[in-house]
Image (cartoon, rainbow over all chains, first blue to last red; front, side, top):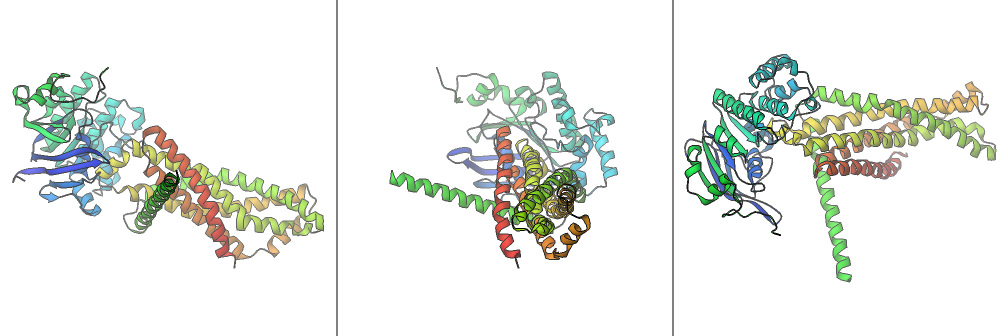
Length: 258
Length: 258
């Protein structure tokens, strides 16, 4: 692990039955860096994210956050470690039993012990950062469009001013304009906070917009990692095929040929 | 053929033992989080309302008509050997010791157990439980403990009310349809009723409250496979609650008989 790594994965493997999803995956993310992990569906991107967050336990390998090994960590230490992270889920994963402001303020109230009134003020402030008015605060999440839900999810992810933010497919299911809005919000919010970010995506346009560095995962391993500016002329056949969206190339597709 | 049969028995036994082990661990976790802080008082109070107050009409109606039918049936039976005066005593003992706790438990399993399984199951498949974890909140403590504690506390209160409503139903039928003298019916009701009749019913109902809420939480928490998985979790929660209530009722009756 390098001295400046905020997150470090060393030879992480994870299987479900006979299916090997992560295969000796290693990755380093420096402090303040924005890394986007790209790759096709089922290549292990989300499993990798869940292993970092402790939602899944890897079969082998090590994961460090701020130099602290998180694999096999006790639940109480894990809870403390997660206080410095934020997460935007693919479909926002808002609590539909709570109004919008309570979703945003959830981490502040439950994990940081902030009083409800103060937490509501912070929630309205964070909603304004993602372009949502105070009139949204008392709405039920199910009454919002998917784009609005993602923005509420983003407000929740940044509510505690975390040091690390994870984004799982932030633009999936959005129209191009709303996708662009979310990308800009991610870029602005994370720059504003100075946070380290790890984003899972298969949207190349979005990746190039928000990434300092891009990594391509294929069959559970990193096959290329480098600066976002170099992705178009890196010379890696896997990256070239993925960027061009070609059927022909080293990336095998699980499609039965007629 | 013989070998296949033995293998099938072995598979079923292993699956059953794994489920028992899984449920036992879930129960231990639940009890641990009920007793250890932090406590989510607001959620606990919300569950008290949801499980207790909103179940009152269903439990009340069940108790009222059970008491009425019981009075009619016992009158028919007891009149065959001129023991009509025993109607009031049998109605009150039958209700307090057996029918009010069991029928209330079954009604709550249908109303509350199913709702808990559906709500937590939906939270599981929409990643809301993962979101709780990333917000440094233990889902056992936040989702399971308040529901199970509310079930253990509210069911005895509901059963106490069901006892009163059921006895009133019997009284109504006995005095209005069967020609019993109101004051002698009331006297017969209380003359032979002992404190332990009521207490044994309340102890049973507390156990049934634990079973119903635990099964709802367990099946919801472990649901997989989208909408179909949530439906399956709901069915399993209700069916397993019904079966466990009836089995535990026998053993509790044996234990509380003296």
